[in-house]
Image (cartoon, rainbow, N blue to C red; front, side, top):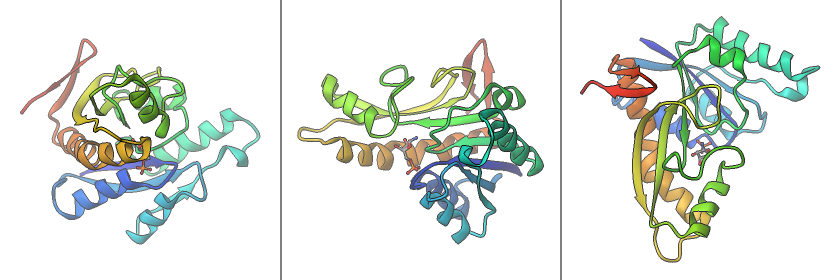
Length: 208
Ligand code: GRF
């Protein structure tokens, strides 16, 4: 059974999608063992507690410096024997010490079709504002492995979503969540949990 450590910062709708997929046996060989948020007020922590899942807040505000905060995050993951780290709306940059401890064992959901509208400054609604400003007709979501860069790791799954006339960033964000994020994140976890994902020369191969 693959033990998931889910890192969150906000509402936790992607966490909820994972919890629902486990409950409905869409994900059969993985379980959420731990939820960590950098934000004490994140509703995602409530979602975890409602599911009797250990949920902790590890906030940079509670540490002398960034290094100690990073060390506390890594210690919590390792103490809980997390196998796969899942960034689900996590707004903190993952430090090298954690990336190195979990090579191709950290995944992130990004609300665009990488390499478009990603990288530094592209998070949350800003992604969808960029999409609407550019006038693209198709956007979507991407699940990728996390490496030392920002949204630069090997792509695991993507799913396209139509941009509609009159979309606002909020309407588009919701559609991308419903039609893409909440589907491909659980699917990617299930594929990894069933050992069907390999990274070869920086590219993901999925054995169907
Ligand atoms: C979502 O737009 C997701 O794509 C991004 O963070 C936002 C909040 O997600 N990664 P959640 O509702 O906290 O899962």
